[in-house]
Length: 308
Ligand SMILES: *[C@@H]1O[C@H](CO)[C@@H](O)[C@H](O)[C@H]1NC(C)=O
Image (spheres, rainbow, N blue to C red):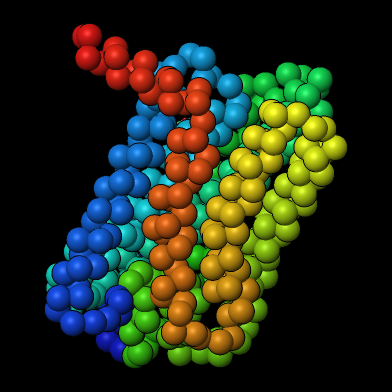
């Protein structure tokens, strides 16, 4: 990329959560703890699923792929944010900023699609149990996972295509702890109205439509579960309610930030912590660690480690 023109911005200044020196140290410890929990918890889940042949089914493959995506989603910006709490000047290069935008959209897009794929998997399992084996094979599941990543990458490239070439000529303060697209395009020295429409019709629409799709599939599943009274169904209902909570916590902030682009609320940077930190932390807790099969596979893995 040739950006020889001197008036071009070469680095951006990030504003993380503000506060006193002590507060910054507190944030440092708080987020370090969360980040390590996310990485360890999610990697443990992926390792467990891969090492237990009993868990080699589409549902668990999707879950462990979600765990890996969670690790990626919390790694593209959070470690830098954590280190930045200790620094006076929080800056990021132009290339670094574009890389953050790229990875955020790849991982968040992939995560959204995986959540949709997981809801579809549960829909087939609960609403059409007799056809489950025919509809969801491991091969189909691999296709679904590849499809999720492909959509994530294409979506991200489509956002980046117009962002890298924007004229950034002066203002370079990004009001967040990482380069989030709506905040970065606001800095471009051009009419950002068109850009925001483009973003709205890409990221905003993608988040909104997957969210609506998820709500519809969960509603259909809940209605089906409701009409069958049994202990197993009561448990399924509790699980589904938990899923809807996580999904809302992930999509709510995304939709708020990306589908209302014309206003810049001070809460935006706090909300972006939801999709980079809190969702990756909650996913393993809600989707997997309440699951008896996963827990017993973990114990098995642990026993084998001890005995070898
Ligand atoms: C992701 O899903 C694919 C397809 O089912 C599976 O083969 C792969 O092992 C999974 N990856 C992880 C890390 O779980």
